[in-house]
Image (cartoon, rainbow, N blue to C red; front, side, top):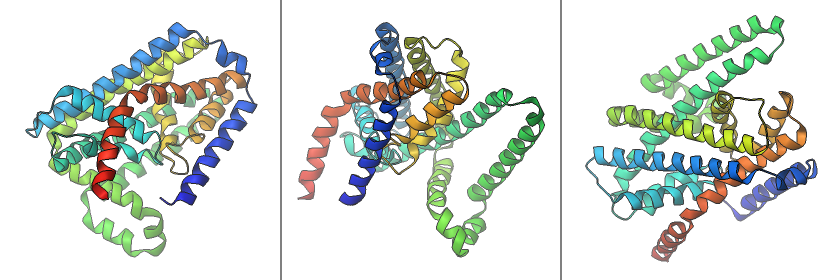
Length: 313
């Protein structure tokens, strides 16, 4: 990525965040319940421990047995790197932060984990949409259910074609408009297809632990809400909406969707009835808590980053 694009990306994030802060009551941010925030941080680390355990077990399945602390530190460095890269692609750098794991095996395991995370996020987003439909006016429900069902069937058929029909990929690449719009998506799906073929058993384990980590992240958001005295929504609500909202972090316009995710989350919470200042404060905290927590990966990120840059000279 060019320096100009990085600068514009950071400037866009900064402008969005300033606009959000301008439209909120900062006294709410200063009056949060610290004990609830600490519980949310605890569950965020639980999520990361589960994700690290997943990597450790997946590597064990391919006959690699690195020290568990190294996997955790490398995972946290990757999480921190993903916080500052567009589309959160920085997490794919995990193989670069490990010393005792062959890079090709680490990459294969990361692809398996990322593939299942993609499935979980999409599935969770669909569940969230069904859950939120009941908030619409009654006369809209039949049309909404019909449209959503058709959309799911279409997306499922499309995914099956991409995964199992090699002719479909060639067709997309030959059609000018579709190739422009779809090549990058197809490249991701091709990686996913490779992971499915090579790591079938690993994908089952990865999916299970991914769902458990999803529960921990939902609890993290639930306790952030408790710190702001948001009691109108149950854990199920936060459990279901976070995969839907965090899809915005993959929008590559800004680092990890910085500013974009917060805006989308704040607007969504306002639409369903939260006070604007409370909604914006929650959105900001949902970014601050993970980013600050990821800073424990900074030593590994700096150490390995320095080694990588030195080797390139």
